Length: 358
Image (tube, rainbow, N blue to C red):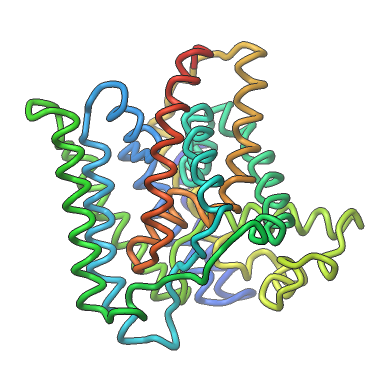
């Protein structure tokens, strides 16, 4: 499809959303388009950035991610303090499920070559593996949410929000200190002569941070990805009679139960997910990446990894976006725990990826 007809189609959908759903959802769709365009245009991959640091000692991707976190936190934490009743932080409970889920997610994303946002924008670019992974990611996310209460029963504490605990000034200072420490460790580990700056990635980081803050202001909640995936499959399972949400601890919660009865276009996570794929598709018209053909064995391993991505991300209360970007930038302790465990998983995932020839 040429870019002009695609642009007109996206504009028509935004107008339809504004007229028949809500103006907020139309604006969020446009924000999602921006996210997808930046992710695809800058090839801003959370997964790739970690892998390049591990394999090549190239710190540029991770440094760009730290810049994204710093800018987003500098805006989001004061906003949360100013509007406590209108804006919510991305809080998740420190738990056994978080530790296991983040570790498995970190390993799986390296094999599948994409996290939540990476799977979305690469599917939008038309990369076959990520297109195949998307539906099993949704299935895994749904099953993870349906089993979440059993995982939390293994051990969990209440979510810890730095803004509520210490106030915005201390919360922001602690967040900045944590990011500086990570940057120092990354530079020491990669070596003083290693590459640490990429202009395109740094510009992408700032743009993504701005879009993430806009998402927080417009939606009233931080940027997320995996909830939308789980909701899509939960709707299918409920509509076909395979699942009774009233009997499930997660989906019987009022907000989640209502989401199942409403149009998917009212869900803020779903509408930005759709926007991300649309933005990536718009980029792919002129910049379609080449994809290496995969063997049947690689396809099978990739699909299994995609399922684990969905399942583990629900146990870990988010992916690189929902747990890391949104968690850390809004002062959630679980975001920091997620990073440590997911990076540990990535150390193994990179080796498995190499072993199976991806």
